[in-house]
Image (cartoon, rainbow, N blue to C red):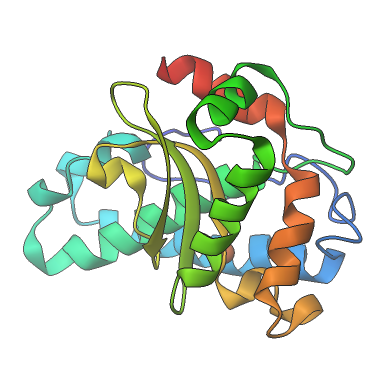
Amino acid sequence: MKNNHYPFDLEPLPYTYDALEPHIDLETLHFHHDKHLKTYVDNLNHALSTLPEFQSMTLEEILTNLDQVPEAARTAVKNNAGGVYNHQMYFASMKSAPSEPKGPVLSAIEERFGSYDEWKDIMKSKALAQFGSGYAWLVSSQDGHLEVINLPNQDTPLALGLIPLLPLDVWEHAYYLKYQNLRGTYVDNWFSIIDWDAVNRRYEESQ
Ligand SMILES: [Fe+2]
């Protein structure tokens, strides 16, 4: 993004709206990016407009210092800063199919979970286990230990002291236009559009 602090910008998608077809359709990406993410950006800027002490902070700094936000504004800041951060990472974690897992993070996945396929099973089960809206995440602990977790709403691994490596948005707005209630089919197809170069960059920075 042009600004890494208030006022935040709506960062453009790093690919065209049809780039993820047929796995994620053009119409879903338009709604997801142009409407849903834009609303989070606008609401975050509105919430921060009366909080000058947070206006020079990055999203990461805001999300790791939520306890310093005045209580009356904390929920709005948490949800909307999380909404911007999570969506930017989600959109920046996908590319046109086909995508093959590779690199140091694949080796770490195989070491931690047994195999890439076993990791996929765990990631999918966490995505399906998230009741209502939220995300499944591949994360690293501060000491480099990989985990798969699910978090509700726009909660972030950052707030738990974890390093986010790969988010999977399972809010209905991410898949309902194309897949309706079939979250599992959306998840199965999402695996073939993961941008493993992006995941490897985050993994190497986390080590
Ligand atoms: Fe979303």
